[in-house]
Image (cartoon, rainbow, N blue to C red; front, side, top):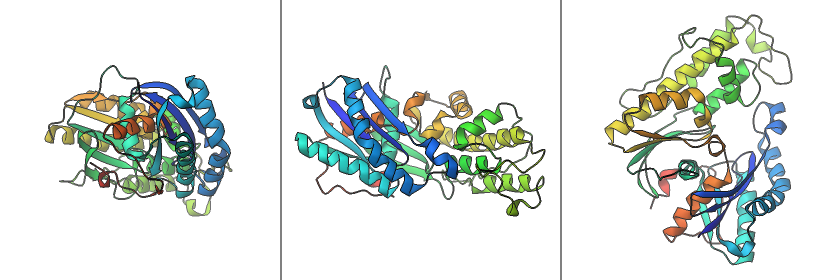
Amino acid sequence: MTLILGIETSCDETSAAVVEDGRVVHSNVVASQIDIHRRYGGVFPEVASRQHVLSISPVIEQAMADAGMEWGALAAVAVTYGPGLAGSLLVGVNAAKGLAFGLGLPLVGVNHIEAHIYGNWLAQESEPEFPLVCLVVSGGHSELILMAGHGQYRCLGGTLDDAAGEAFDKVGRLLGLPYPGGPSIQQAARNGSPAAFKLPRAWLPGSYDFSFSGVKTAVLHAVRKYQPDLDKAPVGNPQTPLLVRDLPVANLAASFQAAVVEVLVDKACRAAEEYRARTLLLAGGVAANESLREELRRQSPVSVRIPALEYCTDNAAMVACAGYYRLLAGQQAGWDLDVVPSQALTAIGR
């Protein structure tokens, strides 16, 4: 039995978890900052890093208590070192270094995108089969990754501008919906028609890259038809009431969601078919979107694996899982491990 303590502080969740053999989750504690950042309509980096400082020790202690494990039972400490917010990452990395050094344990650095992929190994009856294609969709990332084996990554395509999650947040603000935009748009879309507005799809022929700035701008133009002086009004500011009268929020939300989901699903399925993947994975915060999950399952030419909802958004269990497979490969970080806010996943493949 190999127990890994995982630590995650890449953005605005402080999380710690204890995972056995990369599969069995004994604890997974997440301290969310959503209520704190809602007043800003997005994550305020300085506030996030300060909150991590306050939360990191209690969260780690709670994770160990929930797991019912003694410190001596741990085999290693795994921590996210990038990509993410530099100040937030520093809190987690320094906490992990202190614990690993004090306990005499190996320190394992984990890429945040890699961790999201490994959320698909948690609490599952069987492991995903290689080769596989993973669609990673989160607030800052929209990527298609080809994975030939553990730690072997090839990026087939990525976002050229706004990532899917970022676009959800920005459109949510335009529609006057609460932060974060993803869950709010999903809720609003349930009462709308995805065909109500003809929004563009950036197909980028011959490429597996993504672009969502165009559909976001199209929503902006649609809103302006109902509020010509939109640039002068704080539409979507969470501190003010919605100023756009008679705005068809549900129809706009449904049409926007459909435009994003259609492109994501189409490219992921084409990649899985072209590269003869045995499994198609979904990962990242946007993987919690019901429409995306349903359409991927419906259209995929191969077996689909999707994490449980608690392993889609940022959490430390996925970090511990990824750390376990790196530890098996004999990889551990030195005490000079530093944060790399823009670290590409394909730069760390074995």
